[in-house]
Length: 52
Image 1 (cartoon, one colour):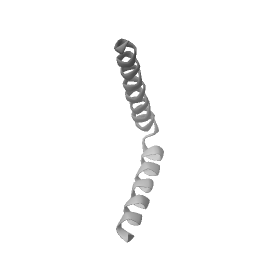
Image 2 (cartoon, rainbow, N blue to C red):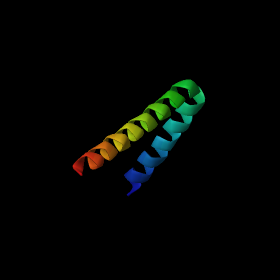
Image 3 (cartoon, one colour):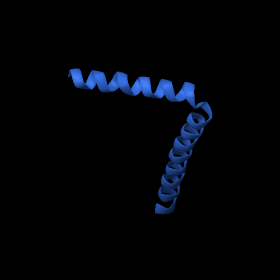
Image 4 (cartoon, rainbow, N blue to C red):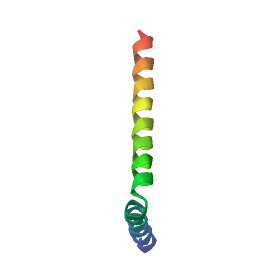
């Protein structure tokens, strides 16, 4: 359980450092993640629409 807590806090610290040190790269990473989610949702919607 202790390892999970250390890894969680380490991950949070890494994200905070990344946001402060390279904000433009962090914004691009978030934009890319959202684009991926939206593309997946769009593909799923097209699949469901083509079932009928």
